[in-house]
Amino acid sequence: MTSRLQPDQPHDWSALAERLRRCASALAGRGRGDLADDLVQDTVARLLSRGGDPPSYAYARAALVRLYLDHHRGAARRAARALRWAASVQRRSPETSADVDGGALERALDRLSPLQRAALTLRLVEDLPTGAVAEALGASERVVRASLHTARVKMRAMLSEGGEP
Amino acid sequence: MNRNHNAWSDHDLERFIDDDLAPDARERLGEALRADASLRARLAAIIEADATIRAALLQAPTAGRTAPPSGVGRAGSLRRWGMGLAAAAAVALAAIGALRLRAGSKPDVSAPIAAAPEPDASTSLLAMARTEGILIASAPEGSARPRPARPEREPTPEEALLALLERDELSAALAMLQSQPSGAESDGLWAAFGRRLTSGRAAQEALLALPPERQIDACRAWAAHPSLRPATFEWLARLGASGDESVRRAVAALRLEMHARPELRPWLLSYAGASGPEPRQN
Image 1 (tube, helix red, strand yellow):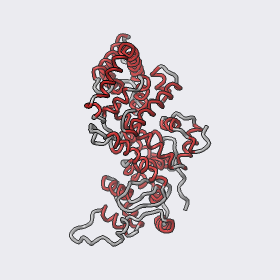
Image 2 (cartoon, chains in turn cyan, red):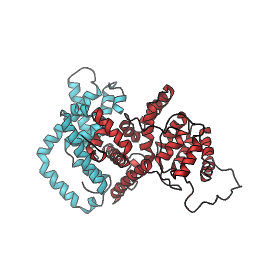
Image 3 (cartoon, one colour):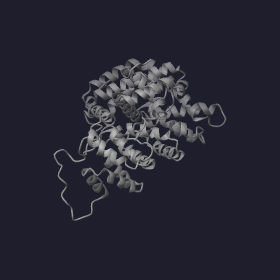
Image 4 (cartoon, one colour):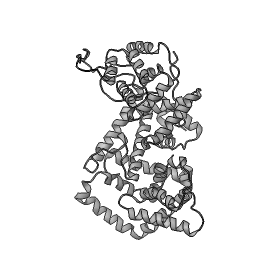
């Protein structure tokens, strides 16, 4: 609702970047400020390269989300095995297993697919309706509904069990 | 699609929260929610979980019960949070569905708003409460004796209100609430009053005795308490559909005020189209 009630047109590029930062942080996750910064900077750079005034926030946000998904597609292909190995080692380490706090929530979020996380971010953080989420993700509304439901089920399972999803 | 209340899936409830149901399905689910306390509890649990997920995405704690426990960082805190969620849902269920009041400083309970004041509404409420056993009993069980006098100082407004409730002087309690100017102290009194009610119906009946502006005051105060929110927002939606333009304006102003509080936004969204149950006709 916030984004619906606020003016969609940012005053300048810095204001646009500032608004994008929250969405980027939610997408990138805790402790990945560098990725969030990269996402914002790449988004702004792409938009700047097209010339003209700052676009609407909705347009810029859609560009940011697409960059995030692109990043994950490439990164996932390159590092899927390494990440799975690292995650399995992390799960087994006593230090991590004792840290069942925000870490558990964050790990549960990390286990969502990029599309699911992006859908959750756009729905719960940006408060977009399903149609706008679908538009931003370049997916159908049906896919968005399924992604949101799956993501919520996983997260609720983690919350109710107080552990891993 | 869904013929009875048990047929509504979590996915349907999520779509209700997302305002993504077709109008007819939304209307049917709204009716089911008004009729089925367990369904409302499921809805409340999903909304609470959404708030927690949102907080995690924003990497910031939320306010009130929607926030993870302060023990974040300690082992088992999420398990406790999960239990807290279940408890919150249970309280929400009790707040709306139960018709029996409990005593003492037990869970907050809420209530909605309604139409015009009735001259003898509080009297009839008290009579109904006594005959049907749905209200009030503010004194803890086994402590029916009056409180010892405290001559050394004047009682605070909250103490005075509670004393009235303990003596079953509901008319006087409601008059006192009406006489309070809006503000932090008034909110505190409304919250204290809400804590003495354990039934949404009881709270509804109490509010029926008040003019709409006081009902709005109660909504403002009770929205701060998660267990009071389901009934509060249900009745806020009903007030928003009032035929009185001044009431509608006051509700709109309150909604704008609530919109500044992130923990209330999902409630505003999910009750945006609800009109709430009909008030009792005296």
